[in-house]
Each structure stands twice: as C-alpha cells, then as structure tokens.
View 1 (tube, helix red, strand yellow):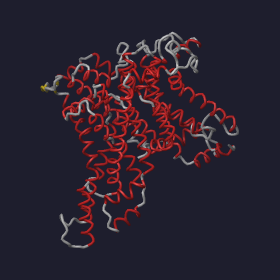
View 2 (cartoon, rainbow over the protein chains, first blue to last red):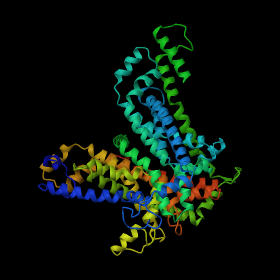
View 3 (spheres, chains in turn purple, green):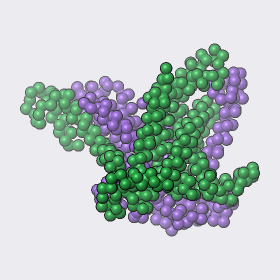
View 4 (cartoon, rainbow over the protein chains, first blue to last red):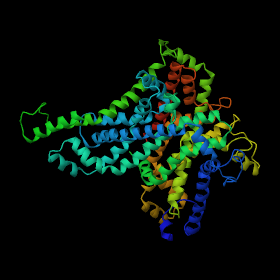
Length: 286
Length: 321
C-alpha cells in the first residue's frame, strides 16, 4: 500500500497531503459500517445456538450453547421436505432457464432477422413488470392450466425472466465474429454453432447466472406462497413463514430455522462471490 | 429441437450443392438465418408471453369483472374502480406506498453511492468489506424479516436494549404506527444497499483516473471533483439506479415479503403497502377482480412515475441545455 496507489482517489475527507490519515479514516469507517451491516446475521446464527431462556441475552457467544434448536427444527417439522422442494425447484428452474435464455440471447446477439430490435425491446420491457402487479391474473391463468399445488406451477412460471436473456445477450455481443464465420463456412448449422462454439465460450457467465438464478429461486417467497397451500409442496420460505406464525415466541427455534435457510445462500455467495458480483455489475450497463 | 436440426441440415446441403433437390424448400441463407433465429427464440418468447405478457393484459381487463371464489366471472363495468376510490384502506395504502417510495428511492441512491465511494479506494481487506456490505442481499426476505422482527422486539429485543443504553430505549419499532414504516424502510435499505453499491461501483470504475489527476493539478478539492467529474459521468448509472429502485419501490416483491412477515400491514395499517393490500384482497378475501383493478392502478402509477423520471432526466441523458 504505497501512497501513490490512493493519491488518485479524490473521495472522502482527505485533502492533498493527508493520504495516510484519509485512508485510515476510510478503513475504520468501513470496519464500523461492515460490522454493523453483518451484525443482524451474526446475531441470527448466535441466537440459533442459545436456549429458549437465553435467547434474549446480550452475549454474542451463547452462554450454554445447544444444538437442540436444530434438532427440533429438523425432527418436529418436515424441514428436509421443504429443503428438498426448494432445491428441486431452484435447480430445475436454473438449468432450464440457462438453456432457454442462452438460446434466445444467441439469436438476439448473433443472428439477423426481421423484428430483432422490436423483440429485444419487448423482452427488455418485461423487466419493468414485477410479480406483485401481475400476481392475480398469473394465479388465475396458472390455476386454469391446472398447475395449482404442483411442482409444475412452482417451476414453469419462474423460468421466464428477461434479466438472464439481457445479460447473456450483452456477453454474446462481445464474442468476435471469426469463430462463428469459420464454422458457418465449414457448413455447420446454427444449432451446431450455438452448441459447439457459443455455449462453451459462455461457461463463465453461465456459471455466474446459475448461482444468481439458484439464489433468486431459493429465496423467492411470493410465488410459492400464492400457488401452493399443500404443505407437502412448501419450499423453505413458505415453510418458515408458516412456522413463525405458529411459534411466534419461540425465537430460538425461529432463528435456528432461519440459519438453516440462509446458510446455503451465504455459503454459495462466499464461494461464487466474484462471478456474482461481476454479473450484477454488468447489469448496470446498457 | 429436431425441427431445427432438420431444417439446418437441409439448408446446409442446399448451400453446398446449389440447386440440389433437398427438402423442404430451398431456403436462401438469409431465410435460414431467420428461421433459426425464431426457433431459438421460441421457448423464451412463448414463456414470456404466457407468463408475463398475457397476465399483464389480463390484469388490465380483470378489473372490469367480479370474480367469485369458484371462478365465475360477471362483468361489472367500472364498479371495482369506483369501489377503489371510495375504499379508505386502498387510499391509505396509496399514501403508505407514496411515503415508502419517496424515502426509499433517495435512500437507496445515497446509501448505494456512499458505500460505493467508500469501497472504491484501495484499503486493506477491501474485498471482505464489499462482501460484508453485500451479504444481506443474498439472504431471503423472509429470513430478513424474521431476524429484524426478533431484533426489534419491544423492551428485551437487542436493538431496544442497546438503544436504552444511550437513552433512546422504550420505543416500539413494530408496534407504534408512527415508527413502523421507518423501521420497514431501514430494513429495506439494509437489504438492498449492497446491490446498489455494486451498480454504482461499476459506474465509478468506468470513470478514467486521468480526469481526477487533471482536476487535482488544477487545484480542485475532493468536493469539486466529485461534483464536476463523478456526478456528471455517473449519469447513465444514476438513471439506471433511479429507474430500477423506482420500480422496486412501487411494485417490488421486497415490500410485500417484508410486510407479510414483519407487520401484516399494521399497526393501524401504517405499513399497508398497496402490493400487500392487493394480495390480501385477492387471497384472503377472494376479491380477484377488485385486486386486479388495484394492481392495474399501481401499474398506471408506475408508468406515470417512470414517465416523469424520463422527462426530468431527459430520457436518462440528463441533458438540460
């Protein structure tokens, strides 16, 4: 950390010549803000190991740590079932969505056809439609299709989202033409170009999107809440939401259940941090 | 995909052996490209049409019907819309939503940009700080709501215990109608700020360092280079952030999820966001037609607000001359 590294940065309270104190100020501000930010999550994990009588104690380290809350959650509730449902739904949506979106993005970025701009704009404009505003008609439609209380109802409507198409299109626009042209001259059809050239090249972005889709679907609540009332089809989010309605005061159980639900997403985030961050950053540009 | 490969194989041979009698018809290279493109787009286009396009149109028409719980539809003209504007709960929910939007959009802009400026400078452990600040965003909103409900419990919850040590205790964050919307907004900003931080960070990293060097040589202080370089060059990012946060504030699922678990719209309807009220009317009282009418009003409001945003920022270019 030499002084030239940060001298170019004009932000913060530092004036010229005060580089080191400025950077120290930023550092300590970041320590304070980041600790405050993660405090609620640390508190959740810590409370998950506290007994019912200790759960409001102020110590971060549980005085009498216990695994009883987790045992309760997994044995008294069909929590494995919820987790299986969440995993199955999220994984299926992720795989199918990656496949469909990369196909659509390939066409939008690499092929010429009438209506391309219009179609892209229409797809893009669906980004402005969020689930709460179409919830009622979507429910009516999906019910009419006989998908109420079914995996199909949980999975199929969740697949279609413009974000992934948009991001993949951005990525495909940046691939050089030569590879594709050579393959087309060799007589390869578009499907082969897509499957043998485009897909292998898009591995990094597909990995990032896979994490992104999985997290989004694991965390989604409103749609599963709307489309299922059969407890066998509950996902973790609907499962814990109904659990807390019954066990309002048992905060140690609720925090243990929350920890179980949040842990996979936090672990995935720390493993795939860089990819995830890149895909979010790319989305800011048009 | 067999249709695609068959067409493709035929076309490929046709391209090589000109005029050969290959089925189906001898498509030209251009036409083959068209057909392939439409086939590639087909699954997603069908899905988006079926699960977003049609519901969007339906939501505008469903409001003209009375829908019973068993799915019988009776045309009711403007009845739902008339009922809407005479419903104090709906009008109240619009007020709550307006407050929520007016605080949330600037709140996310400021917190996102502020954090991005902090994590832009090279300090030790930078990657860790960025990750910690983003972490709330990967947690589900249900869990977020459960954690904060626990932290904000009256008297013995950790927030109140800590606040009472600095003489600010004794508040009922989720029980006092004057405070609960603020608590909800704080939790929402805590959850979303990391996302906007990353968007701003990407925008900041696009600004060439040379500009800042030149400004410093000319004797510009940090505030001037922020005002004259950073803000103007961040216009595209700012527009994106304002647009996305506006859509999220008016119609985003985060509002619904948090309200559903944390407050159920209370106390005294003080957090009854319109998105929550729509759900309540549809799925607790089975008033589908009425709920759809209210949702379409929300869409209209969002369209007007984005229109205003486009007009105020000159279509995102912020070009005022």
